[in-house]
Amino acid sequence: MRARGCFATQMPVVDPRRGKVKKCQFWAHAVDDRSWQGPAPPAVAYIFAESRGTKEIVAQLMNFKGVLQVDGYAAYRALEKNKITTGIELAFCLTHSRRNFVSVSIDDINQALAELAKEKKPRSKKSSLASKKHVN
Image (cartoon, rainbow, N blue to C red; front, side, top):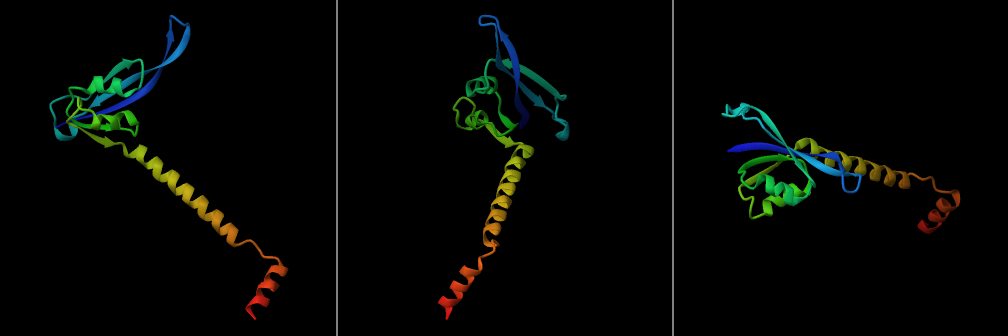
């Protein structure tokens, strides 16, 4: 089974018709079979594209079958549903996945601290005396 990594990065390009800079993409396709003594030497191919959309990545990978290591970008997820690119199994990058755990953890901690702060607010003497009267 073949394995490949695929990542996109922005490439600013001057549009000669408009004279303005537009955001294009360089798609990097990396292969390294050394870990299982595969036949191919390590290599990276860069493919220029006008966009980062699903159509671009489908066209680039229409003949690929195997494991594709990717980040969490939605265009890669569309590969699994696309009829042209059957045979691709996505392997998501753990570093990108870790970001979600960190943000969830920080959000959870902040929420818990806010709840504790609400509970620890000192009550006024009047409210504590009033609550004692209701108990008796």
